[in-house]
Amino acid sequence: MINPPFPSWPDIAPQLIAVATGRAPADMVIRGGIWVNVHTREALPDHDVAIVAGRIAFVGPDATYCTGPDTAVIEADGRYILPGLCDAHMHIESGMLTPAEFARAVIPHGTTSMFTDPHEIANVLGLEGVRMMHDEALMQPVNIFTQMPSCAPSAPGLETTGMEISPEDVAEAMSWPGIIGLGEMMNFPGVSGADPKMLAEIAATQRAGKTVGGHYASPDLGPAFAGYVAGGPADDHEGTCEADAIARVRQGMRSMMRLGSAWFDIESQITAVTQKGLDPRNFILCTDDCHSGTLVNDGHMNRVVRHAIDCGCDPLVALQMATLNTATHFGLERDIGSITPGRRADIILSSDLRTLPIELVIARGQIVAKDGKCLVDCPHYDWPDSARNTVHLGHTLTTTDFEIKAPEGANTARANVIGVVENQAPTKALQADLPVLDGLVEGADGVCQIALVERHRATGDVTNGFVSGFGYDGAMAMASSVAHDSHHMIVVGTDRAQMALAANRLAEVGGGVTVFKDGRELALVKLPIAGLMSDSPATEVAAKAEEMMQAMRTCGCDLNNAYMQHSLLALVVIPELRISDLGLIDVRKFEKIDLLEPQI
Image (cartoon, rainbow, N blue to C red):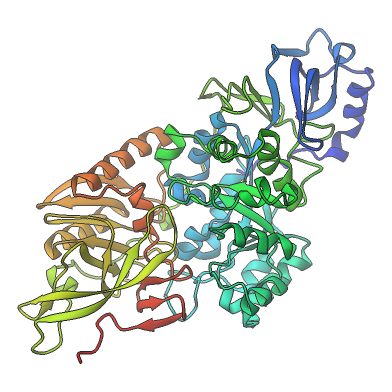
């Protein structure tokens, strides 16, 4: 059941005033801390914070006058009193967790607000899947705002998804209580080309007075970019260099700089603030994609803020980028993002601004975590069978399904190859001359096979290709039912028999990630919900994910967070080369190309 709406500022204004003027006692007082004011970028010692009904009533040097006999008093002991951290752009499904378990994982890291785009589940289950994510989000003790996915499919005509999102779906969702705006508009050629469907979705969002999320994954900052900005997206997280960040903020967009499990784009862009001196209020920090291992072992938005500081950003500026800037961007500056009267009492106590240890977390006026432990319940949605049975292959796969036939009489074949780039979402469009054995093209010299297996409609279709950069050796295969954004099944391997074993295994368990070597399964992460998520605790999923990544290393792959690279090989809206159920896609031109080049 969705929780009742959290009381608004007007709802409890009389209580706030009564506490602030000393006519009534606060529910809670935090006493004797350093108030980090992100509005003014000041750290003010010897301040108290008074809270009533889950909101902040007073901040000042002495809250004694609004402290009663039943007021809970927390001694800050000179520690910093910080606003709860906000993740401006993220996909819960990338953590392999449901909203409840994702919340349980990040609350101890000080994240109290998340702006989530569930376009992964939208591609599998459509509007109904979005509603399930939205409803579980509203059950949580922290703020999870949902962006209605905009692009399912992400690139119409270049992929086939399980379900599609329409402008009518977007218009309907804008009336839901937890919808904050439109998710990233990934079909950037559609926006630049004034595609009526894309513009209708943007219009429905703007008419509702909500924020349109951006995704401009192209280095072209000419007329195509100008057209995209004119179309309405208000932010972008796909920048990878300083010029990208500057171009976006100069055009009135917010530049969202991300540090996920595999995307390291802050260091190369934050120089727009630290060196060029641009106004930091137009820059926002986010994660985009974090898997469970990162959340459990390294952190969430606290990790991002620490990284920004390590890249030369002033701590107060970095905190502003992870709190107030985000709130302002989504029209929530009067509700979250700072420790000031009327705002939700989302607060962190920390003893150091640079290393940012998260020692106590308060959300909506309740203590939710202390010293790395979550202290509250994160309720689960009752996921139906329709969300748990989503892997349909049509038939048991064999080695024949993964064969790539060479041109008649050829001894070698020139293939277009997807080149993985470590720590970045883009790939490279490469070519390689590959050997032919018994009429079939084989991988060689660091090039292994990739296959996309259709899993939504049981067509039995398999699209084959080649990929380089993983470093796999020996007879192995890795399969995943997480394949952004169409979420068919991606299988990468050096041996067709192993590839068939891995794919069939995922069909057997209802989705997840598996690694096979020499006929033996080395690791399995079960993701039964939409083939994307587990409702098991994050620690358990993270342990399984670590086994999976260790298995990848055992097979010869030493890339940082190589699983994330694997899962994005079907993302046909990020250059340069991707695979879909329709074939090999050149994202520079947004067109299908042949796997094998013609013989000369």
